[in-house]
Image 1 (cartoon, rainbow, N blue to C red):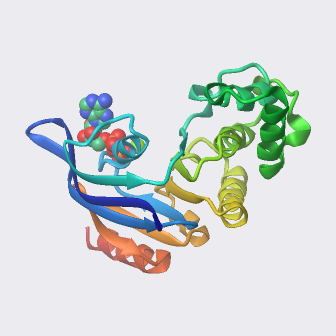
Image 2 (cartoon, rainbow, N blue to C red):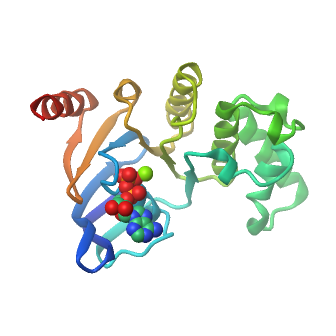
Length: 223
Ligand SMILES: Nc1ncnc2c1ncn2[C@@H]1O[C@H](COP(=O)(O)OP(=O)(O)O)[C@@H](O)[C@H]1O
Ligand SMILES: [Mg+2]
């Protein structure tokens, strides 16, 4: 499979009369960092939940590179163990690895997000940006091919915001992962390889982030 995500005519609605996704199509190549934009309620989080199989589409084709990792807007909804290292290891429980293999994965993942030195730190003592990086480390430890991030910077201050987006950009390039990042902050578009705009249940713009940004600014100026 050469694409990280392939969607063809995907349909989903919470109720029969009101589709959220209405024949939505999208192809995202492997090894790239893409961003997903759209107004509040346009279906971005719903689309991510379909991609990670938390929801099932009513019709259409959906193919993703597996395994998929998910990073929530609020890391406090995601991190469950008392310390950093234990949290990353917890995500590996289902894989039934040996203890040395678990240690190796945890070290590799925490090193990738530059937080190995905090492995024994309690989760509550971390900043919001560090918590998001732990959630990303959890996905790296599971050897995820595709990383989905739903407004991961929404609760961060501007410095941590840019640090996180840069780190995800560099992880995607160094490790050959693919990532789809939901945002409404246009300044973040500078760091991605491609951008997608979701409107009226469909992808209405897809491609070069600069062009998508221009189109968005034109649309907003016309309102
Ligand atoms: N659990 C749910 N039950 C019913 N409707 C929902 C649920 N989650 C979201 N919706 C509706 O689906 C639409 C898309 O929501 P969402 O995917 O959260 O949009 P976005 O992430 O782009 O803001 C909205 O109209 C929202 O009210
Ligand atoms: Mg959302």
